[in-house]
Image (tube, rainbow, N blue to C red; front, side):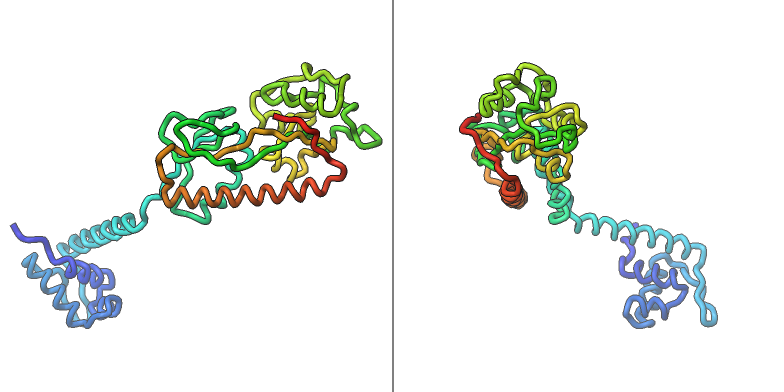
Length: 314
């Protein structure tokens, strides 16, 4: 059984066959015409038959030459494609778990920017509604709402939070003055998972006639904010999840009150596992985004006159 044909001879032959010219093949390959002729001759010796018919100022493939040229072309393309695939390493995956509202309303809109900055990194996301504990499966980092103190994990506060009523810009349009808490009735209230924050609000502003047990409860912040934006009622927003709606003008703060919360959004990672270089890039970017977020809210609150923080909250 013969050894495999010389691959360089195959490459030169394919080029000469494609151009039907030794001289043009020599130009493309940056070699002499004599070198092309020698490589083609060595391949013809391998097959023991001519691959070209030599005519005056022309070469024409023989039937076998056509078959060999086709095989050479396919083989060269396959080698090129496989080498390119090796050169393009698959994107590195970063596995994220997170509170569904945090991911949906804060992180996810920003991720396209990160992947443009780092095209070889990809973010995989799993979410849970009201996520309060690190996941019990393999993950790289998680974003959790709480107070820290989780066992078997590293954790670091990312964003502290304040809570405040928000409504559609047109919700109090029927008034000929700025609204006050006295303009709210219980049927307007939209509660986010519990009645806690509306109860805190009533206590903070002394709204004794407002019953926080009324209204409706939704299990996700995103639903509460959407309901308020379409003027179904008024809900309690927070600095992390409500920024997009405030920035876009879909929601406003109708009152000069915000309640500080002792909970925060934390970044957690598995205990004893050092972050990879890729994960560290992502975390650095996330904390830079958080710093911009804090600056935006500092300017936002300064732009509102008369707001204050009652000494209450959780």
